[in-house]
Length: 81
Image 1 (cartoon, rainbow, N blue to C red):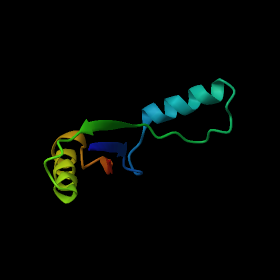
Image 2 (tube, helix red, strand yellow):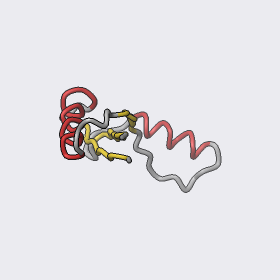
Image 3 (tube, one colour):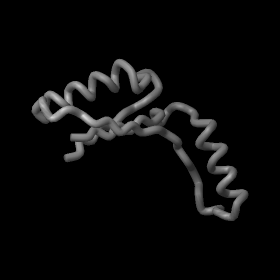
């Protein structure tokens, strides 16, 4: 089984990289782009030895402890079969 984790800045946190991307897109002829929020994602392959609920809980713990800064970032986990 695989887990995909999306980590994004919270909506109240400024995103200077996203602003730079938006400006670059506008300058390259894409004026319809009004806002860009950048983020990151992680793909993890999980062992099949655990049940789905346990896998979800483990990946959530990994997100809280390692992958995301809970002060400024949100995360979302998808388990993929």
